[in-house]
Amino acid sequence: MHSLLSLIALLSILYAVYVIARQTSQLSYIRRYRFHPAIRQKLKKKHPTLTEPQLDCVFLALRDYFYCCNRAKHRMVSMPSQVVDDAWHEFILFTRSYGQFCQKAFGRFLHHTPAEAMTRPTLAQDGIKRAWRLACVKEKLNPLTPTRLPLLFSIDAQLAIINGFIYHLHCMPGDNGYCASHIGCGGGCSGDSDFDMSGDSDGGADGGCSGGCGGGD
Image 1 (cartoon, rainbow, N blue to C red):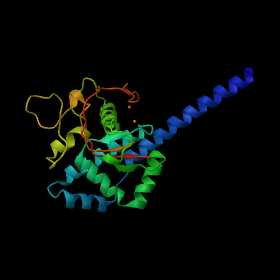
Image 2: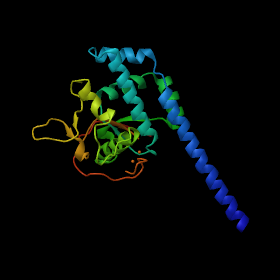
Image 3: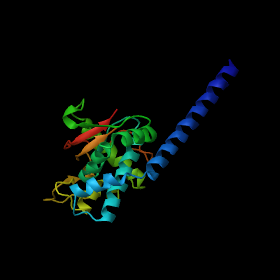
Image 4: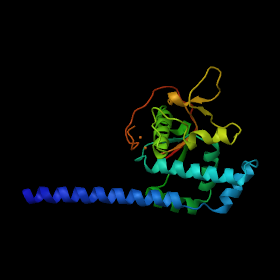
C-alpha cells in the first residue's frame, strides 16, 4: 500500500510538472509568434489611419488576449477591444495558419462565437471579468486597485478607434464608455480563464455587461 501511494504521489508530481512545462512552452510560443504580413495589411485597410507603431501595438495586444485565453482553462475570456478583435478576425481568415497557431498555443481550436450564440446570457459578463483579471495579472497590476488600465482595455481609446470600447479607470458623471472600477461592465468579443495574482480564481464585481462576440471550444 505504501509503495502504491508513493507511486501515485510521484505520478501526480510528474503530471503537475508536465502541465507547467507545457503552459510555459505555449506562452513562449504566443509571445514569439510572428503574424503573416498580409494580416497586418488587411487590418491597415480596415483602419487606414493607424501608423506602423500603432499596428505593432494592436498585435501586441492580440498576443495579450491569446495569453489570457491560454490561462483561461477553457473558460470564456471576453475581448475588450474592437481593434484587437478586428485583428483576430483577419487572423482567423488565414485558416491553416490560425489552426496551427491554436494547436500550439492552446492545444485546441479557439472558436469565435457571436454573443447571441452563447449558451448563457451571463457568459459574456463573466468573460469580461476574467479578461480584466488576467490582463491585469499579465501586466503585474492588482485587478482590485489598478494604477492604470491594461493594454487590452486602453488600446481603443489610445488609438481613437471609431466605435471602439472605451474604459475609464475611475468613472466620472457624464463619462461615455465602461467603468473599469466596476468591471462587471464591458463588451466586445471573447475567447475561452480567472482573482488571485495567478488570475485563476473566479469572482469579481457583479453588474451589467454589453455583449459582443466570443471564442471558445
